[in-house]
Length: 187
Image 1 (cartoon, rainbow, N blue to C red):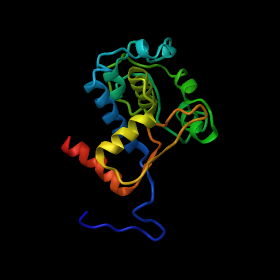
Image 2 (tube, rainbow, N blue to C red):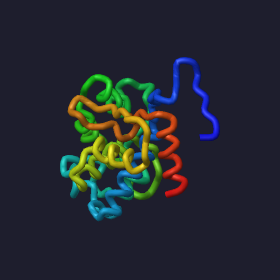
Image 3 (cartoon, helix red, strand yellow):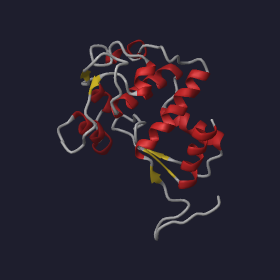
C-alpha cells in the first residue's frame, strides 16, 4: 500500500459493496472450476441446471452466460419496480426466491450473437458453477479469500433460500478488493 485514505466514519475494516465488481470474483471462481476439470466452457446450461429447461437459457452454454451473450430477453433497468431485473434484485432484500425469478427469463435472440449486460446471466453462471463443483458460492469465495491472503472476512447477500447474489452482492474491504483487482491484472 502506497497511500490510503478514508472518508470520516470509514476505515480499513469497512466493507464496501462491490456491486457489479462481484461478477469479477464469480469469473475467478468459474475459472477455478474449469481448471479443476469440474466445468467446461462448452457445457450446456440446461444439462447442469435442468430447472431452466423451457426458459431463455435453452441452447446456451457456459461461455454464453460468462460473456453475457445468452440472447435472453432481459433489460437491466431497476427503475421499473415490476421489471424482472427489479424482482430478481428484490429477492435479496425481501427474502424471495431468486432462482424462481430466473425461471421466468424468456428467449430473445439466438445465443452467442450479441452482448447484453445481464445480472441474471451471472446468477445462472453461479448456479451452473455450484452444480458442477458441488460447492456453494460462499465456500468457493472463502477458498479464494484464503488463497489471496485477504485480511478480512467478506459479506455476501443471500436471498430467502440462501442463494448468494453472485452477480452483485459481495462486500469486502478496500484492500481485499485491491487483491481481487491485482488477481485480474496479474492472473
